[in-house]
Image 1 (cartoon, rainbow, N blue to C red):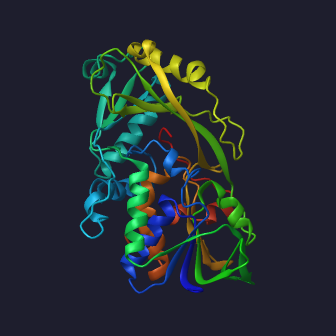
Image 2: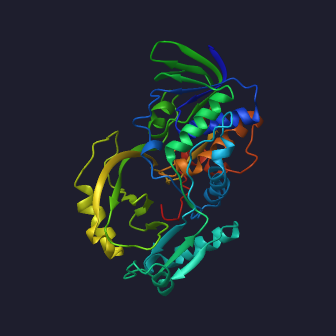
Image 3: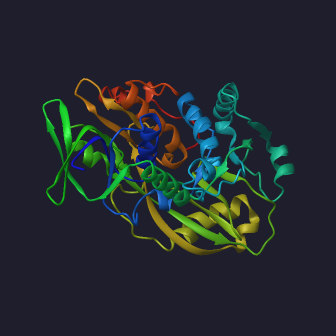
Length: 388
């Protein structure tokens, strides 16, 4: 086909979710996803940790998790094709966020907001943390919040499940590199790919992740989204540790059980922005291992078995995503990007939201208007106070 109702730039977990929900809401819609690399070698989804949590401060982020986590948990069946289930491998292992004395008030306030939105959130003081997780050193820790219904999945399983289901519903996946957005005045006409072909469309969606700023620039739309390199590590310890949830702290140490070992890392927020996939093989020993061993002494004997790099699509304004059309400037050009590390966990919710915006002209399931582009244009950040 040379013309579609909707063309989505970016076939990762977010773009594929948009495609899937478009076909759910409008089965007759002609939808194409343009993805430059069908192997997804450098896609953020395949390099993600797979975590999904409700521990946020912004009601929109909590609501997106409340929608997305049940979807992910049941995705094996929901995304089945011809009786063949997806392989998302959801594990409700829970999330634990821990803080020192200086962040207790913020954690308490966030916990109250989460509970007000139906989240099961257990408040644990230092004694309760020590009793529940005896391998943890609570030195310097004042409290934590445990959300037992949160967990993690296989990110590639979710991506492939959404992609395969979308294709079964009639979505075309086109392997090509977008080099320009064909537009005239205030209307996007389609996209031009590296072969020179123009793929015409009535609606264009920018779901290009860490590359979304470059795509937006093709129509003159400023986006404060930058690629931020981060490392993920798989490590093991010979010491016995009780069953742990996904653990996060204010220093951005984050890890979870994975098979015989653990998967996690510690994001350096000061990392130079850019498309850098080089691996610093000393980073674990230099940065991650000391933080692990300080909090869980059993990790003093751990060994890192593998390290890989990936990119966050970091929204430099406020860390929250942009989920909107370019209202008043190019109403048929949409952005769903800037998740700053939360793209996979919120992909089902934002896929539904953008599909509703295109098909029905408004958000219906969730009101995500505060995550719109207006705050970007007005430089009015809407910050997430949760531990990100």
